[in-house]
Image 1 (cartoon, rainbow, N blue to C red):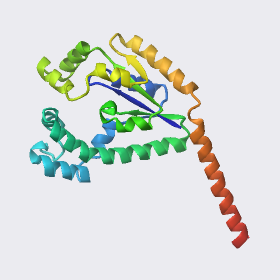
Image 2: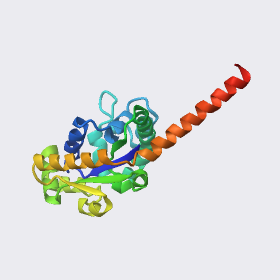
Image 3: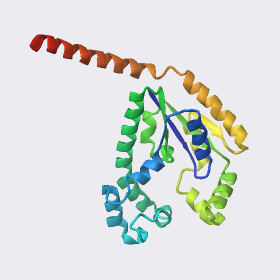
Length: 229
């Protein structure tokens, strides 16, 4: 099995690409979903966030106010780094558990939907391929402004919390251009899917796993014959 890192920018259309991939039967792990799970009430990450950011980042029901927390970290790189240091370790552990699960189910590859893949850099080394969902900066700003009801200034401030999307292009192995209509994007995703399905990059890990399993079974059989049979 091999790993494929999928990323983009805010409002670049990554969710649209993920939806198409899921419909094609691909195994997709969404880092944003895991990020919400690891900060649920009572978790270690939740308690650390409340300790460092205060109860003002909580809703009346005790859950995290994601909008309030987002407004804090988008305007303060130091606090953004603090939040990342709290949430990233449990997210990676949860991600690893899901990867192993898909491996045991026999999937050839797993797509990791990681919004900050190119910002964090360290996860790139584990990916066989990296994919960027791209749209031009002007379209990206307009989409974010319309989607979240933000002024152009606020939208640009949020975009500034990530690497400029144009600077991510040379970092990616493959680029899906989502600046146009949905049909164009779908055709690009279909081509990507065909390429991944045809890849034999999954074989080394699968063969190693089979060899290891065979060795363990053989050892157990020898032990059983020697001591019990």
